[in-house]
Length: 241
Image (cartoon, rainbow, N blue to C red; front, side):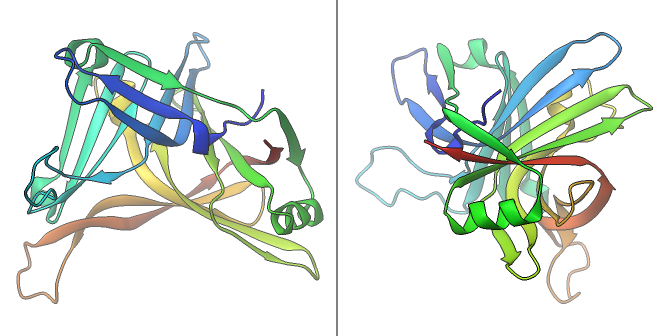
């Protein structure tokens, strides 16, 4: 399977009333696989944007503002609104066919993809400015679930002598295998990832975190604040358009 060309892959919604259409670039993907049943489902993270008013001759940004983001599958969506304070954070689940007339997931792939398994090849591909994706496989033996994450490598650190690399990129979506939620799409957290070997991943999850200098102990915002380290199997893929 060729790597996803995220820069040219989109989610587009078309409303029932023929009003505003939004086309939003995809940031990451995850396939959840049930090892017992063999069932699999794909989910896509859209690029974030900001709360806005539409087509008015007044200031367009809403205040207080929030980040608008979300996860889409073929049938479902989970909108994630992240406001200035955690108390206003909002995760909204729904069915795409109910809220919109049509949801389009246009997934494009690169024509040629090469898996890079050696540090020297990864360094050379990076310095050659090839498009780099990663695939990260996570397995939870207790639940019998497997997750295949795919995402573009937006930031790659490297050394030439000796050849070394360290991925530092995001956002992506990370499933919580132990989550007690009614739907798989609700188990995802937004995260960034770092690693410099192909057998371990260090994620930082976006969670509520205390804000300020302690003057208001109940105040909290939402930021990348919880670190989770786990075994993983990574593939680095170099692609040409």
